[in-house]
Image 1 (tube, rainbow, N blue to C red):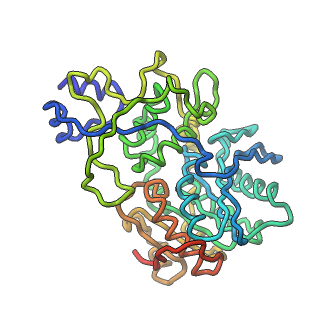
Image 2: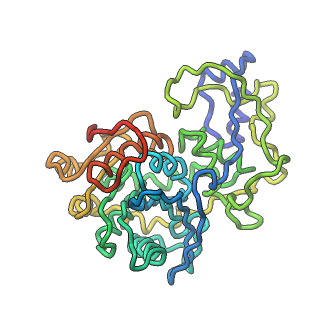
Image 3: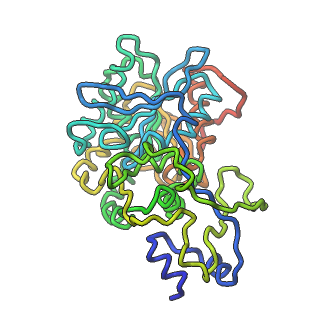
Length: 394
């Protein structure tokens, strides 16, 4: 095993592809990436702590449009945070007249409750309904609810409660009952494979890209700080931003032509120095404490709630009254119930390529086009700018 491979194992990051490792051995280097975190206020107009009888929920709101439009309520997946919707919120509000409201769910982000460990579908659904009632009261606007993974399941549960009379649309991103239930058996193994701690915020961002959890560097730079806390203070990493100059990475990013045409694609280039300098493989600054940051939530302890998120989800989704959109990262993810429902025209479906599970982070512009087209087609909103409408298709 080469010294470079040993250093990769020590760092808990996935190994480099053989071609990249070969280039590094020869001293062939490519550009390094900047993993310095960015702040939420570059994407949202306001951060608000909404106090409800169930707890205090951190919410991020985009700028209100001049023309009235619906509120797009965004629910993140398990382990993520409301900041995973940062780039999507910018894209969708430039396309159609609407306001984005992203909520840190119980046990996640900067939300605080009396029992952060209660992640049952019923509890979280009531949390979301409570936040909206506290925010808007009797003047509830028209609502489009969109959720990713676990958040997508919670969207369905909220809609099924029928407590929100102004809920007109439900968008579910990359969660299907059949495949989700099958994946639960290997979920603990996946969680154990992740590093438990990070040396710095930049190290966490780098890991998210190298591991494939997120394939969009710019999105990872704003969303990852919302997923980790400082071990010493117990506070979310977002509260430490902006970083002072001494904690920022100094990286050299020369101009070079990428073989990828898509602006959201990540070039397969070398992110580390040659082997003779492999003792410092990270672009992030080396900190004295190797365990400075940990995950905001220990998802492995919520295992008893996982089946409740997804059981019966397909039928519940099909039986919802609001207009429905299912957005997937792959056609193979569709189960039998939804396949039949899709053939019967009970919901709109769109499949996006070249993305991972975090579809809305990897391809925020594409997702915004799909959701914006869905809103215009159902006359929930009007155009705020020119964009290509997506037709329902695979």
